[in-house]
Amino acid sequence: MFLGCGEGYGVLVTFEGIEGAGKSTLVAGVAERLRSGGERVLVAKEPGGTEFGEAVRALFLDPAFAVDPVAEVMLINASRAQLVAEVIAPALKTGTVVLCDRFYDSTIAYQGFGRGLDGEELLQICLAATHRISPDLTLLIDIPVEVSEARVRARGGKDRLELENAAFHTRVRDGYLALAARFHQRYVTLDGVKESALLVREAAAIVEARRVERL
Ligand code: TMP
Image (cartoon, rainbow, N blue to C red; front, side, top):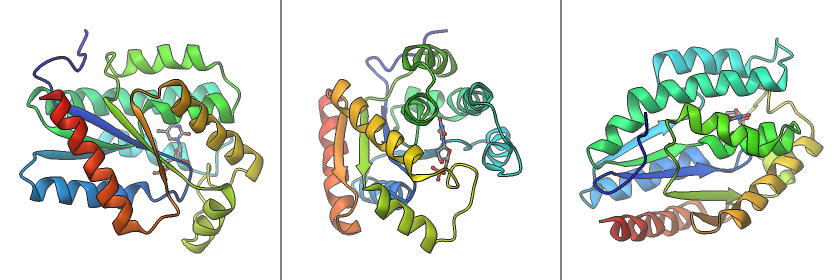
């Protein structure tokens, strides 16, 4: 089934970045701003976002398991396929602005650049999982790895991915910057060290501009 975001569809905006970049706060702030401007907005999150996906998320982040990178890809894409089928595709069909905290670029960044799996192969697997739905706009919230480590420490984070070393997170960050350069038509990179309210205003303006382009 092909469910591309063609004419008549909503807008899929994805938020990406390493741990502690501030994606969740930014997504919530942008959603509130857009809603107060009269937009219909849906917020989604990966991994998770459905009952099935939340069960996968708990398994995926559990530090008790040493998970093979290919198994990571399959788990994440199981959660993703469910989220797209159950939540994202129906919302896009009704013209909703969908704000998704992570999407398949996370797999390219973490399992591709971070774990060393082939990016092109990963993209094909991810596109199968999303029924070939791709983001219209991706906001990369970029922060230095040292800032990420300090923020994760401060919030007491210790899930399976947060426990990876600085070299892993540096590969992931560099991977995101490479994706932003390669897919520059849909990527905007924001400085995640900036003050949160300022970032919300900046991000909401970018989303609104892309929304207008699509109408
Ligand atoms: P988060 O809710 O803090 O973003 O945590 C999700 C974690 O899962 C984060 O460490 C990134 C990781 N992840 C992947 O490794 N691959 C993926 O495709 C996705 C969506 C997340």
